[in-house]
Image (cartoon, rainbow, N blue to C red; front, side):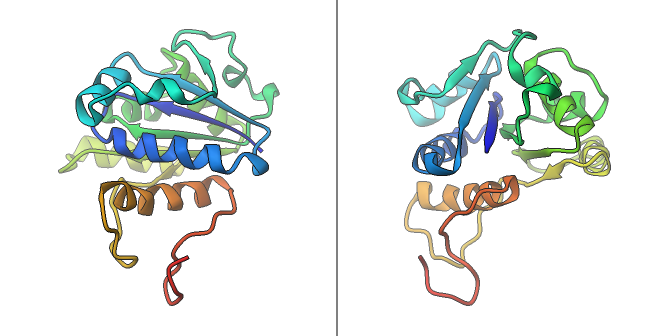
Length: 187
């Protein structure tokens, strides 16, 4: 499976960190992982997480304005794009069909090719514009997965809490992961 990850400047860098860590662990299911960062994503990561650990991930990285990157075309055959966290500005541009950078172009490609687009939206509360944009992306074939942790598995720290969302995101993207499932023991 070929998967792309876009990280925007929305709050919620912990979700991106846990996602990238889990993708490293799932390398047997993946032939390629590509990564694109919005302008503010690294700044928010450094503020929220307090370090530059984003540099440790050995994934292929494209510049946000690189429209020659493979994920800018359906012919590259990426199976999924996960935008985590997904800012409401990014979501609005996707909903409006505005491909002004590689993140929004890649999202447009996923929708037109009928492939998996998972937007991990991170905002609260939602206003009517947010809700309408989520509806538009959903109607176009995307998946809206709010960064809302679950507590069934009794997470012990922030990373475990973030993992409750990330595990669901990975399942939605089509990956087979071992995770807590309702009605079973924590695995």
